[in-house]
Image (cartoon, rainbow, N blue to C red; front, side):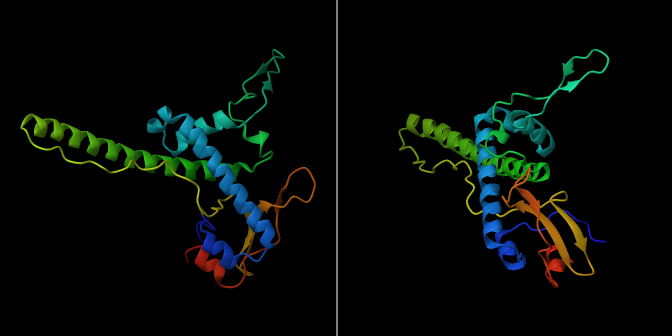
Length: 212
């Protein structure tokens, strides 16, 4: 049995292998990118905490900032405890009942993008400081300063990032029929707009997606 982790991770693969409703897939992709942009914004607002985050600690921190949970009741005292009823950036205010596994995949993606940008930004700062120090010495020696015209790297934008489905957002993988079900946005009523769609990947395509 192959290890199931990233099932579909690029826009190209979605277009090639998914045979569900184009509108359903398009809307799911739009929401994925919107939530990714939301988390990139939350990270930017809490930039001072970013250097100390890895994917696990960053996920916990970002869920604390964005995910609303109700307090539980202590059976002995009858008083509520715990919970996170008032996060400063409540994701459910815009996207209620957002799937937890997909949310965590998005958070992981956002942290990776922000950490990569931060590393590039720190390299840019160090280079700028080296040029400034060198120019101070050159000016003291009566030489012309070196022009430093490199722009700082821009904070990441979402762009055309494709969806990554992790275990929890797919089910009913069949190696006999080469089909799989994915959780996608399909606002057709009910308690949640997120539905398990019919099997969508067919033929030998699934082996390519699973890296076989």
